[in-house]
Length: 317
Image 1: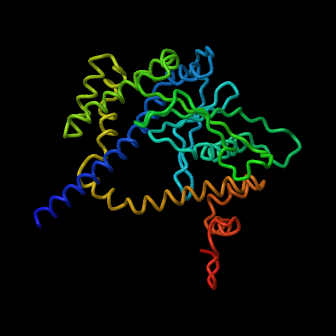
Image 2: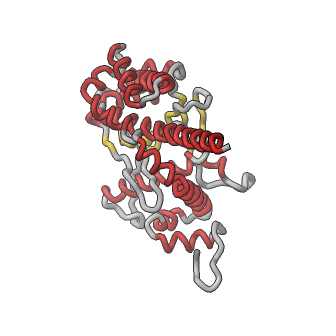
Image 3: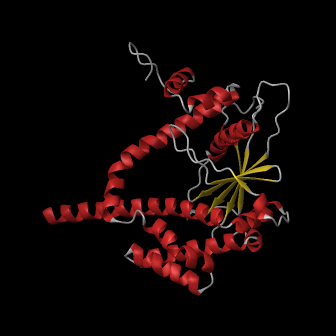
């Protein structure tokens, strides 16, 4: 009986670690995607041309404006840049989320605030402020089967479908798993090779017990087969560092202990996103942005919009 219980506990721990290992892998690919395209401006320009059917040739015209972080929740986008009057906001996702449009709405508001600050113009002035046209794109390469391309809309989350919505935001999601969106891949070689590298990483991680061995073999395979060869030869240490960062046993255990807290953060993010939708519908988008850096205001707004109950005798929850 005791042996069975010990075996069950050991199996549960192994299962938990496999789950954490998968979560770590998802985060790793996000960082690598951004690292790759920020390092290679020519590749980023090729990606823009492939998505927009343009033929720009000067990567120096790209102005990187990626949001690094925000208060309360980690609301940083993967990659954002301005080119030819367009604000291009890119997210890399290994899991599908229907909340992507509201996330982009928050990104967009913050990006526009930075544009206005740089222009040193007042929103209350009589002159029109010129804003770059937004383009919201998600690159998906999770293991769940998804279509080649999917369009997500902010209005899909609106409760009252009959009422006229004064705000809309559209997100294009492309499946970049190896073998998908061939035309896009043909026009952006680096994106295609990134897709092949992720496939190779998954292949070796599935057959090797040791993460370091698996990832080294994946990198070796890519170099030998001309997949991101120059990038990997130049940045091998950084790439492996990112890939191996969270694969030691101590961090596995720490991540497991923090899972409960992370679930709370996810619930908080959902609530903040919901508040953003409700306040945007109510024409109070600027108040919502203020609440991102003001916890007390945010708590009051949660109560006002029915997302939390007021605690009797002690003010707001």
